Image (cartoon, rainbow, N blue to C red):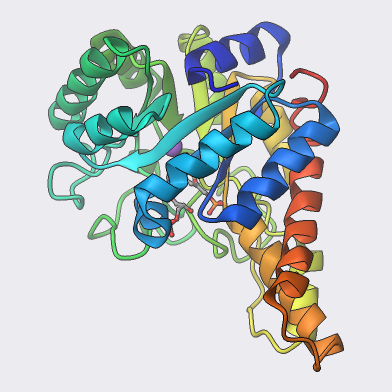
Length: 328
Ligand code: G3H
Ligand code: 13P
Ligand code: NA
Ligand code: ZN
């Protein structure tokens, strides 16, 4: 059944587990996520980015979500709009039947100016008022996603803060987080701890200086009742990079967020864990391998089935590692 994200995260907090929020763009992703949720008896958050709405079209995405709820009625599903850029975008998603929206005002009105507290607070509060009137949950974001290695802030392709930020500017401040939650009444808060979107998060396996898990603990100690969200939480599995490169891909050495570090975050208030890149890597590796090994095949179902199986394996591992399994 479709439920609000607040309900889902309240249960996760009560029982001390985290919930993966997988990005969805197409049928195969949705089926992989749901089949794995069904297998492991896990509640799940499926989320659609602006890029997903552009790729699949909002009406098709909505039908995919309805399809998931119809085929697996016993699995609690929160349907979330990822990285909304304005209250109007969030309003449209509420109208389309999403049960949760993210108002991401962390990069300011122009999408390039981090640290504009008043702007971020204002648009987030406005979205909360609107969404709560409809029984829809809201995720806000405070701080600036980006690399502590390079000092480069960055969101999705094409959108990003300009200029370099100091180490401290890139991390969410616990006091400011407390003020933001008080000012906006958001249901969940995305925080910045040194992760970034995509496959190129770290040039070496991350240590505490570039992946600030300790900051999660400080924020959680200050606002223990707020559900924390980790963006950019793909682990970038080396085994999938190896398969991609073995079958003609060219992905340079790169590292993601280790699953054990995410589990540590979950012990300290992280309830929603955003994962997109890992499913992309698994899909690409699976398709490259299948087509290389079966050069005479041309039925797309054959290689999409492989993509689905690769994504399914990633999902099962995340439901198990985050403690989601068994909680549906
Ligand atoms: O927010 C980042 C997600 O990975 C979505 O990416 O905008 O390419 O769909 P996208
Ligand atoms: P990844 O790129 O690490 O999968 O992060 C996805 C994300 O944060 C979507 O909002
Ligand atoms: Na989100
Ligand atoms: Zn994100």
